[in-house]
Image (tube, rainbow, N blue to C red):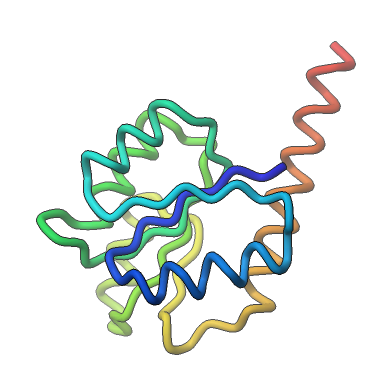
Length: 133
């Protein structure tokens, strides 16, 4: 099972994106958050493999959250999904430690599927290596 966290303040986007992920991976676990407190509670209490992060959140910034999460949990893959299409946001996301960056209006579901397949493969490899040791 893959454990994900969807950090997004837009409930419609959260619902649709979550439905897309569940359609692709029926056994996926999806936690949802839309505030900094919720994010860190969930990150500290769950073993997430991947986080889908919006940049613009009420009272906080997804780039700052990404930086904080990566400093404590560098193994978590963070994928920025945002409405901001400017190169400055891409550069800032990269500097914050994000693993991937997509705009909400211009991402292809196939890209997300490919990334998630890689995450699943890496998780399976890590689990296999742990049981062999």
